[in-house]
Image 1 (spheres, rainbow, N blue to C red):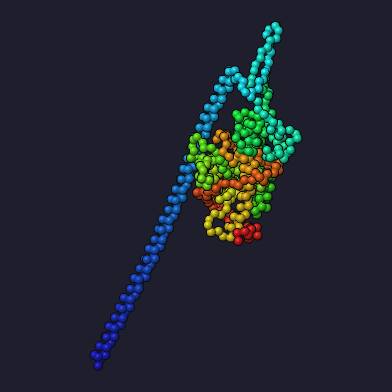
Image 2: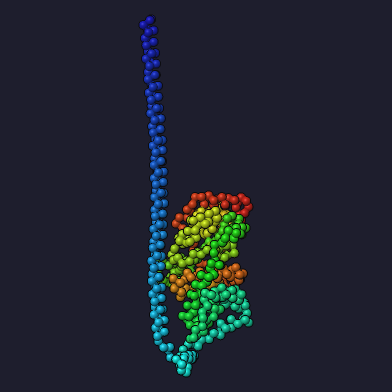
Length: 490
């Protein structure tokens, strides 16, 4: 009996040992599974980190590549413009030498014989030799008899002021003020050969040409002057306007004026610290002889189905539409953001002139620390819609000012005979005259209204300042949540 009892005990012991072995095997299997799962998670985590690093590296390479391309384009344009300036300097020097030779030749050759329609003018000069009787000789000069009846009528005191304004885009009082200020710069003295053209007629020739954009031959007939004389007068008066009147009537505002401008723009839009509204327009030109591609206007060509060339005019205006800054003459192929980077305004802003204030531009400009532009992404929030609506009211001020500029001075809508190197002087004169008319409350005839045909191209790098992005978001938030935003976007 003891043997059987001992045998049963031994069996139970063997069974317990077997159970312990099975349990140990099970625990080992689950441990291996957990280790495999942890290993898989670690591998996935490493893979995700690697992919993120690859994505960041690709983004950085794309950004660097974009910046390199941008710098290359900017350098290429700088090189082009430098070469163009050198070319025009050579052309101008060549023209100057030709004119000098022509004058020397004209002084050494007798005056041409008379023909039909010529009026003879006889000038008698007497001279005394030694103590003898005075002797004299006759000298004849032949000039074409041109009618000045139209200008004489316009210049008479009885000529209606409304008609005068239609012809010259300003009233008699404003016209006389311009003549008085330019008198010392453009007045000429009479000579023994001919009477000098009066200052009033000189200014009138220039204003009428800028106002109508008519060819020089038409200007010549209107004022009874030669075509070359009219061309010379226009450039002389435009140069005088730039040197004499521009410092008085087109300049960046002083602090007190800037404070008033901020208040007026904030009353218009609810956006604080706005000191100007900016816009860039294109002026058509005849195809230049050099660097044709640089002046080629692709957008205008595609829209009008006619090859177009142009130069640019960038302007900043106050709430009344008066220009406070202009940048004139960069080729028409340059987008608005590159024109901005070339401007003196951009350099002054980088020097701290515009710290803490905004100039509002359209979607063709980049968002900078001092340039405020609308949101341009496809899916906008209500807050962003509201902001775009209010900033559009400020943009409209600049667009309307340029529309009046082009409507009042119609030469800006037509291709002109003026040489490319002289165009900035003429365009600058138009901007100054625009300011004089606006400040003098010279209302523009509605018939002269025009519609701008400029295309806005988004810049390659639209967002260039993180701080300005946050500032724009804060302004948009305040507009919507303080009841300053409109509702047209709803």
